[in-house]
Length: 146
Image 1 (cartoon, rainbow, N blue to C red):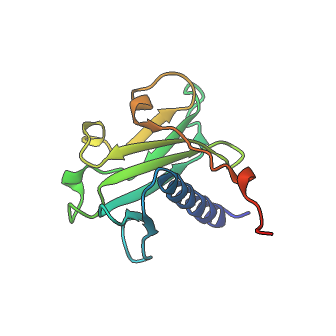
Image 2: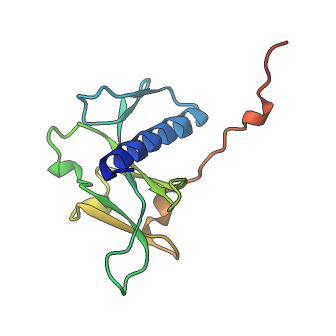
Image 3: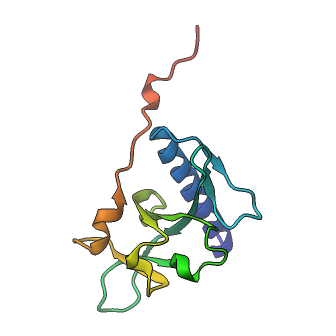
């Protein structure tokens, strides 16, 4: 599988995961158009969300594995400023399965001076407070109507 195809596949999976998680939380969500800079919108609240994804990365021999999210900008660096309201970061494992999800508002101080976020795979980090629980859709209750 070439890299471009894999990135597009992971992007689609990440957006679908975010939409499913928001629907399980009772939100009315819509996928954005291809010309929009956001990926998902919570329709009744007019909240625009940009989805970022990453697989485990190891940049040096010393550093441990981490998820790397690039081009994460604070609201003061965005133009127009209301282009989206928050980021939802999706961390895949090495088998392309969603392992963790984080929600960070664009005006949060954690992204004020950075445009890259490195979240360690193991151990405590300052990003733990942004982590969302992954809800499971119990499809075992699904039955065909007789």
